[in-house]
Amino acid sequence: MAEPKREYERRLEDRTRAVAEKERLHVRAGNAKLAVLVASFVVAWAALGRHWISSYWIFAAVAAFAVLFVWHERILRARAMAERGAAFYRRGIARIEDKWAGTGTTGERFRDEKHVYAEDLDLFGRGSVFELISAARTPMGEERLAAWLLEPAALPVILERQRTIGELRERVDFREDLALAGEELSGQLNPKALAEWAEMPRALPTAIWRVVALALAVGSIVTLAWGGQAMNFWPFVVALGAAAIFRRAFRKRTEQVLGSMDSDPQGLDLFSRTVARIEREMFESPRLEQFARELKADRAAAAIGRLAKIAYWIEARESFMFRVLDFGLLLTVQTAYAAEGWRARWGKRMRVWIEAVAEMEAIVSLAGYAYEHPSDPFPEVVAGETGAAFFDGMELEHPLIPAARSVGNSVRLDAARRLLIVSGSNMSGKSTLLRAVGVNAVLAMAGAPIRGKSLRMMPLALGTRIRSVDSLLEGRSNFYTEILRIRQVFDRSGQAIPVLFLFDELLEGTNSKDRRIGAEGLLRAFIGRGAIGIVTTHDLALTEIAREMGSAAANAHFEDRVEDGEMRFDFRLRPGVVERSNAIELMRLVGLKV
View 1 (cartoon, rainbow, N blue to C red):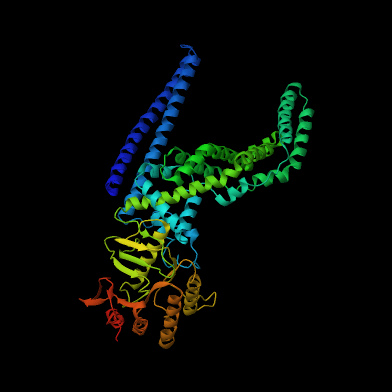
View 2 (cartoon, rainbow, N blue to C red):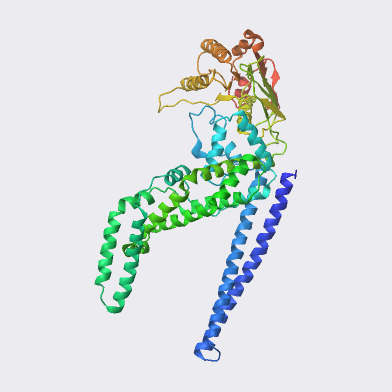
């Protein structure tokens, strides 16, 4: 496998050279056009003003300018494509060098504060997991990738995704082509509304009325032409009146057809170009091959391209010229019938096409992530026996932390040891450990590689409580918000898929006595329902729970030390209970007299 950064740099150099070459051609073409334009004026003067040469030379000059114009446009398009390719590889290199935050799509629209783990694990937003991974260009691709991150897949689906990601990770050309397909477009594409529109029942009456509409349009043209010659416009006025009656009779139905398409031409063009690139690729994976075969059989790219042209006419309804011509030509009705005919022929296939693009873009996103991080292995996700949940990660790191600063830690939870209680001082790495475990579990259950040496686990239902704040608007305290989230996680336990829970500073919002009693009761209840998990605390009283639960629980800790007036952390997880706290040292370091 090619070293990703070196391969990207080679391709970036190629695209940069192409941009420079097209820039030189652009200058030459511009100069040639200017020269031909000047020559055209000279030829026109010589032919028409002086009659020195035949006037046919004017047409030759115009033809030469037209050829140069077409050539120049192709040069500009090629230059723009090379520039976009260069930008694609710059972004890839930035991801490899951990300089990607703020350069991609954040997935902000998928944020849900009530989700059982998404906010705690920074799945969406600036500098998020989604921004790191997503290469999707269409809304359905983004939605599919977000769905994979938000809900664990079944074991057969996870294994299939791993195979397809493995197939596509080396196809850099294919991933580049998909990323650049229609990149200059920024249209609106609403996949759900588009599929619903395509499947709507017929709104317009039978085809005979389309013939009537065409006849009325032809009648308007004929009567106008005849009236201009005979200077009698009454037939044209009658034709306009008939067209007005027809248009009024069809107004509600045409609006029902045209007004409900919640996608614009540019969005459909992007969709069409993406499908066209998928149609050209050959796949080995049965699922990907099935998608490509169905798209080819339907000639989906061409069909969506036709729909985009119809959408251009729909969008043009707001223009002054369209409204003027609509009086006699019934353009609104003609467009509605064209859209209705498209739906009758291809409407029931729209969901299949959307599904294919969504799946492909999500897989390509994960494949690109896998290619750019070749040392990240695929996890071994296996079926587990009832009541035997397990999670065994070696040297797990957080993928959002730059590699130069990341520290790996190993975590094993299984039928014998179901709970890990992690103690340590502030800033020692407790919360980061929870997030590293959680994010790697999310990646594993999405079918993606993980960040670490290895991970062996069974499918798990993840639930976290790492950050929670009070809400004045909703009248909730921090503690009440915390126990609501814990209840949400608890409700997921005891079902077919065991729960992996990750709780930071468990029950920190109450007094030490209630905290000790409540924490032990909660943890015993979770364990009793087959869950496994990690909790962190700086309250050493909670570490006694591990001793009372015997082999089912264990203590671990992070350490710190003070050197040269500064706190030092190595972020390494060690067995046992932490023996010191840094709270007083921290207060002294910031100048508080304690």
